[in-house]
Image (cartoon, rainbow, N blue to C red; front, side, top):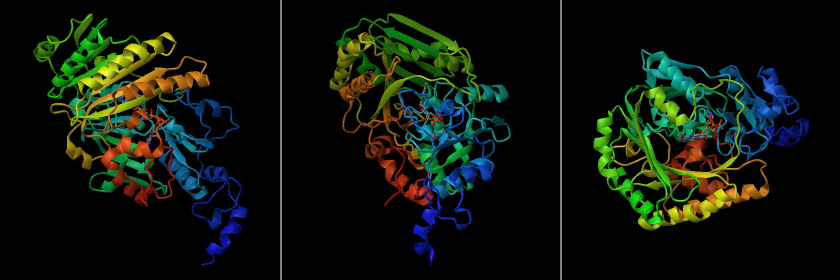
Length: 506
Ligand SMILES: Cc1cc2nc3c(=O)[nH]c(=O)nc-3n(C[C@H](O)[C@H](O)[C@H](O)COP(=O)(O)OP(=O)(O)OC[C@H]3O[C@@H](n4cnc5c(N)ncnc54)[C@H](O)[C@@H]3O)c2cc1C
C-alpha cells in the first residue's frame, strides 16, 4: 500500500541513469552495471578499449552507442542481463551475426544493453532426432559446414556465411527455400530468455503462442539461446545455372520478365530462381539452382522458357554438390567464418519490396522499373553509386514458402509472396551526408518505380527509413494484430524494444 507514496522517494535514491520498471527495495542502491557485475556477467563499458570495435555496426552507414555490452558465456548470464535490464528500465538487444541492415543488433538506437552472443556458437547434429541444435550466436556458414561434416545434413538459409541467428528469427530465405521453406519454417523448438529473464522452452505443444511469435518476430520477444532445426539429407546433384542478357532494349527486358514470371507461376519447388540487375542499365542475369536433379532434367524444364528469351550473352550450367552450391552463392572460398572476433564491415543502404501471387506484376510496372534502371540507374553508377537489384522467386507452383497453413505456425508475414525485390547501394567511403541522402533518394525511386499499394517489404532487409507504424504493416501484414497481442502477453514493458519492434496491444 505504501509503495505509490514511496516511489518518488525511491527514484531520488536511485542513480540518475536508472529508471526502475519494477522497483526492488533490496537492490535499490545498485546501478545497472553493479547489477550485472553482481551476477558475474562479463561486461564491456563505454570506457573499455574493446568497446569501439564491439559496438561498431556491420553497416557503417549507421552508428549507435550502446549503454553497455555484455558478452555472456552462459545462458544464466543472459538471463541475469535481461533481469537487470528489466529492473533498471534498460532496453535489450541480442547481437547475433551483427548483419542487420539497420544495426538492430545494436538496438537501432542509442542506450541499449547489447547482449553479444558470439561465445554461444555451437552446432550439433543429433542423429537420433535428426534435428540440428544450434546456439543463438552461430553463423550460417559454420552451421552449414558443421552439419555437413557431422552427418551430410543441411537446412535452407541465406547466402552470406557470416549472417547470424537474427536471420531465422525473422525469416531467412535461401536459394533452396522454395524446396525446403524459409529457415524459420524449419525451427521445431527453441530455448529462449523472455522479458522476465526466465529461460523457457517453446515448442508447438508448450508455449506454442510464444513459438509462433518468435518464428518471424523473434527479436521483439526474447533472446533465443538455442534453436532446434529440422534437417535434410542434402542432395549432391544440384544443377547451378546462370544466363546473362546484356545490351537489350527496355522492350525486350519487359517481355523477358513477363515470360519469366509466367514460367515462375508454375515452377516446381525444387527450382531456385532469381533475376538480378547491377549498375548497367537493362542487362540482367537469370540464375538459380535445381535441387536433386540432373542436367537433362534442367534442360527439359528450362528449354521452353529459354526459347522465348533473347539469346543470352553468356550462359553457364553445371552440377555441384550441396557445399559447392553454397560456396558458389556465398561468392567465397569457404563457408567457415570466425566464430568469435568477427570484424568485417561495409557501408550500404537497401530496401525491399514483396509482391503477392494474387497480383503478379503487370507490364506497366515492369516497364517503369526497367526504365528507371536504364536512366537513373545508369546515372547513379556513373556518379559513383554502385547498386544492384536481386529479385528472388519465393512463390509459384508448389513452393514450400507459400503454403497458407504456415501462417498458423509462424508469425512471418508474407505467405503469398511471388517476388521479393532487394534494392541495394554501396556507399564508397567517406560516408558524407550527401552520399547518404543520394543513396536513399535513388533507392526510394527504384522502389516506387514498381511498388503498388498492396506490396509489402521483407523484415530481414530492414529499412530504417520506414516509420515504426509503416514497418508493422509492410513487414507483418495480417499477422501484426496477433503479434501485438503476444507482445502484450510476453513483453508488455517492451524490454525488447527497437525502432521497428512490435508494440503491445492497447
Ligand atoms: C551480406 C548479407 C547477406 C544477406 N543475405 C541474405 C539472404 O540471402 N537471405 C535473407 O533472407 N537475408 C539475408 N540477409 C539479411 C539477414 O538475414 C538479416 O540482416 C539478419 O537479420 C541478420 O542477422 P544477424 O544475426 O547477422 O544480425 P544481428 O544484427 O545480430 O541481428 C538482427 C536482429 O536479430 C536479433 N537477433 C540476433 N540473434 C538473435 C537471437 N539469437 N535471438 C533473438 N534475436 C536475435 C537482433 O537483436 C536483431 O534485432 C543478408 C544480410 C547481409 C548483410
